[in-house]
Length: 182
Ligand code: GRF
Image (cartoon, rainbow, N blue to C red; front, side, top):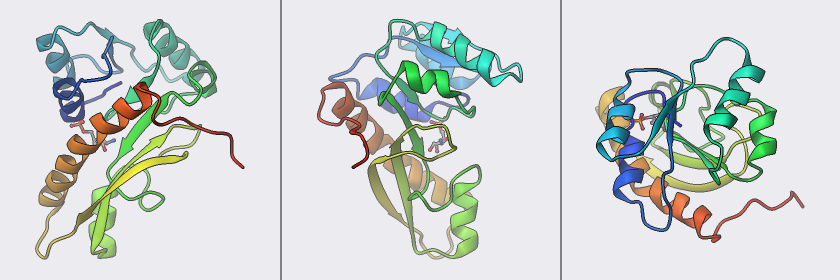
């Protein structure tokens, strides 16, 4: 599931071992991520956002029919409860901070504004809240003196591209699964 440049999708394509990407779904036409999918020979579907979360989620679930998991990779929409019911413990998201710090948009800007010395990447199971849900894996990324949003984001993205294929493989092969809260 993508909305933009798709550099994480590219890492997932390049690291596809132990899992198969069956379809790439975007809420936006014309984004670079779709070109990456087409180059890799992966089917694509556009599910436009229409302002109605229930209807949008239904159409996403239809587009993902036959898939075993939803992997959010720079997908900028919030899915409704139907998706979580349809794919229990099978929806992952990647976020450019060490959650629960800095959820939402502007995570890199927030990290810089707070002057943290360490930020990073989180992969988590998706629940009904934004950038929330059980954390599966994290990778720390140091903030260097003189970092800009662009330089820090580039370092974070490199960590994302290493981490996400490993976590998707772990989900696909059963090494990782969501257990009920104790
Ligand atoms: C990534 O930084 C990811 O953590 C966030 O959106 C960005 C997507 O980048 N959710 P890309 O489209 O994979 O290049």
